[in-house]
Length: 128
Image 1 (spheres, rainbow, N blue to C red):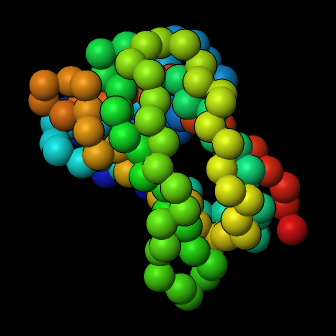
Image 2 (image 1 turned 30 degrees about the vertical axis):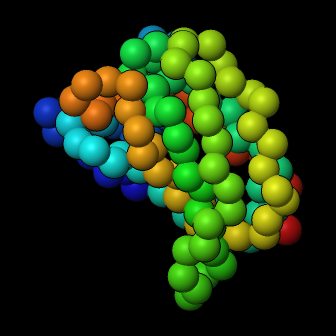
């Protein structure tokens, strides 16, 4: 799930583009002060690393990671401070945490209107 999609245009800017592997598609949020992506895993995972590729000018200065097991409340795992560029950012090591749900909140957009654009999102770890 995602917080929003630019102009409700799911076909061109929907969440499916976060994981499609194409360099020509992206998830593009609508305007707003806090955008987010929530991932529900079919079985528990141990997350260890996060890869994100923003569009420069539409990135987040602060990403808050929260996670939980099924039936529990989300708890804060860590905060990440991405760069405002178009490069794949793969240096985000996450304290290994077992979870069924991961929420990434983009709290401080570099875009004046609060939009976030992500070309690739990768969550690395292991299935349990």
